[in-house]
Length: 420
Image (tube, rainbow, N blue to C red; front, side, top):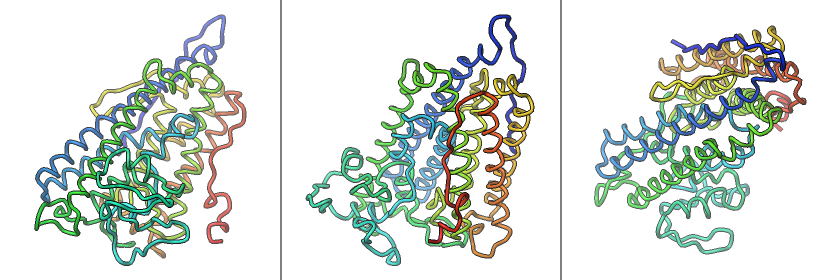
């Protein structure tokens, strides 16, 4: 069942100021409270992930590997809901690539299948394999990687040579180290890394199990420290909270920019329609784990949270307060009603996609060329996201904010360019 969040449209009237003007500050406080809670949940679930990874490395087995994978999937639930805070908040935009960059040339980190290939003109380090090489040359400099540390990953490896595909940190680097490559193409199935990749002595498979464990530990420690930093930015007195609450017009613009850009260019375009156009499972957001259906669903829920001023934490705690929906309703009830309906319709379509994947029709399979049923499921969600973006644009006008340029995507705006 898809959880539908609702918001009260009742507004308190006053003789001195219109309700919408009076409550803007309160709406921005709710927005910051939701951000703090969602990043806090992302942090706590990442810490749970670290505990599960410690158990895996202490006693590698099918069970401990499965538990670490399950902890990773749980950690994605709150984090994906924070993506609605991107685009409009420079503090988040400048930081986000450390924790959620994708897709990645996984050969930078560890062994890959022979069909993966090697270095390319676009990326000389696509098959560097840091796990297997305690020393290597990077940008003409010999790097001592005998000890794999968070600093090595963040300062030397991540986006090495300014190549975006050199993703060395964050959720997807950890995902690769837990699942390995997904070699199933558009057939059902995720990555299948054996637990023995973390075994010791003669039981070790694919070599360098100790260094692989060190990389996994360092990447997880780095993720936690990055999430600690961002959670602080949204706490009382934090830079992100102060940026959105100190200027009401700028704060509301940040809210709507995050909603519209994630909805349109990022999710509907780059994460969904592009994969359909290319029939390419490499365009999956969580491609190693086959968790993309959940990533899409919780991205959509994050947008929903921002508009309705409500967030349900991983422990069931509910954060709510004066909402953007209430402001828009005070300015133009019809615009609010349309946007509410569109946001709920999108969650229905994303829920249907999630249900299909959990029922055995994986996102990989939906992307297969000629699979009309899979394309229809994905594109129904794409169309709903595009429709809700139109309503978000109307909300910008209703609130008399400056026109916002939402993130675009060639897949939506110029499809022919995708194949050039």
